[in-house]
Image 1: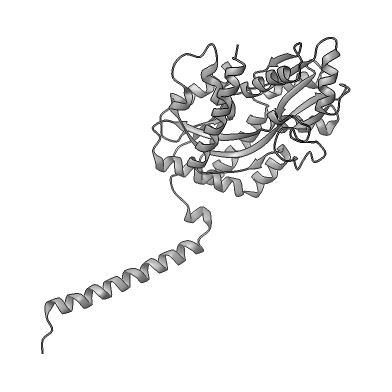
Image 2: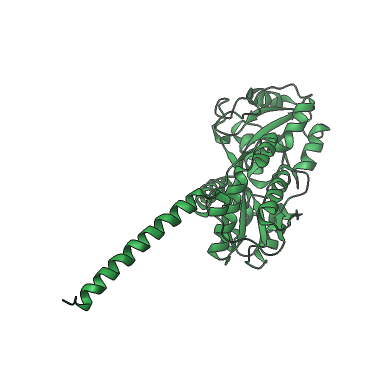
Length: 337
């Protein structure tokens, strides 16, 4: 007549499991119906954030950083202030972030040249990459070889031919060490021993000199070059990605022109100090993925010639390591002076 206690507990346990399963289903349905920015909400800063750009203001890196900073500020509800701290080939600004508290409030914008900092003659101490954590690449941008409009060349083969006999010798400006090594590689592989490589602190200074014809050519990001291409002051003779640029569709790539060593695409990404908690890293990466989906950012990047990305810390780490391996090989061939 009476049911055993174990029998009653068994029924109760079954009802509890059914309730928990139903609750899980409802939770999943609700989460799926939320906007991504709400469903993926995680860590957010409770104080203003500083985004350090270790290069001079006015260049392509600075322009992209300001687009991202504005969008993050709106997403987080906190000011995101861009701080330009150039000098020592990006080392000064990089050290500023390395020495910051690992609390997500100080971010570093860097590009592949960070992989070469430890090869600088003046560099002393620990490799900066060992003291930083890659969080997310927010964009990619093919580099370009640009020339002053008055220089009588329209392609790389013509540039090489022109520079073999030019008087005074041709000069090639760069703004970061990866481009500097590529310029030296061009000089060696194309038999241009008199090619003068000039390294600038920032893209703004380089483009000013290129427009004034104080330097003949430049390896630069398309962001800094485009406005002057549109005005007719400059021209692009090669893009360095593995496909033609959507904003420079008539310019052949490095591969198309037979300069396969220059098949490179530059990433622009965010790093934080080593020791930054994983939840903060993931929160920043998540915000950058949201930023990449913003119509305002996509339009601004299109104008600059960049493509928004927004990947995970693991994916960005793979990108950094790939370019580090390539940089190591170049630095052995062409030691930085």
